Image (cartoon, rainbow, N blue to C red; front, side, top):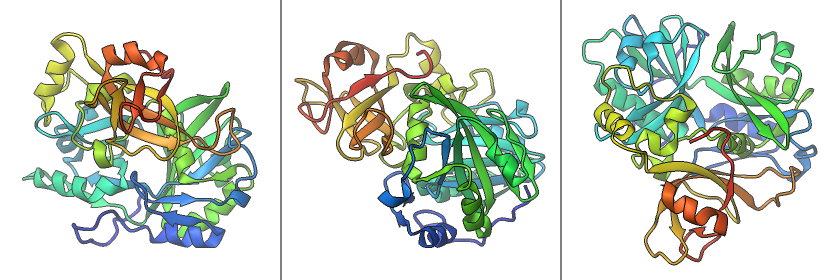
Length: 374
């Protein structure tokens, strides 16, 4: 993928340009709205005509941005900054990564893939500018360039069968692999099981100027859906995203990052590595991330979790998403939530409706099974 970086932007800007997403929203009669996890395209009721689990769906993802780290020293430089082992990452392969403070607290999580001598990182849009600026401070004499690819748009594709990317003349990558076709790239993610049906997931990256055209093409095969519908699958996958109030709150293992292959404990040093290693090897991990549902409105990252009868928080929300309309037995006002808390407190309270949001008597968290063991 040879997309050039976009023009330089004011580093104080809250998130990258979303001009092409604005154009898409206007062309399909949708709304582009700011949310805690980043900008979202919300489709209206008329457009949500089919359950997203029938054949699958696709969503525009303005809440994600792409950073490109390129140059002869790109792999070595980024390897010294993140939690996973980039030295063993093959061309057109992908992995999850975390980026920590020196105290081991996560500043960001990223889906990372390698294309020749460059590394791409898919990061939350609200954190993209600050992450790029922070990485540049550590470049020193390394032959590396860090650019925000503002001309790139991202579409999430979830499908229960078929190969919609083939309709675009592309190869559909397997999980944690990437494929390239001209100026387009696709990255495969782990599938998610929904209502007994496995949904394969891919990220499609393309020029922003092509977004509206490709959106129409995909609509011949899949249902269009809101940005939050993609985040619903993300939450169900148990894959953490650090954004908003969750920034600098968690050591990687507290949000199961090593359980989704986002941490390598045998690699060399990186910011916070000693703290992460101690958390892993000095006794049983006492805090973890769990999956639950709750009624009501949006669950903001960083929101407190309480146990019945306790006035002090026992955990925090990592990421939440509304359950899509027309899907399953859950009402439209149901949210799925990833939250972090003490394993002991969760074991004692979750099954007895003893964990709450917004206070010790707030809305109840009801447990769901994660797709992996803790």
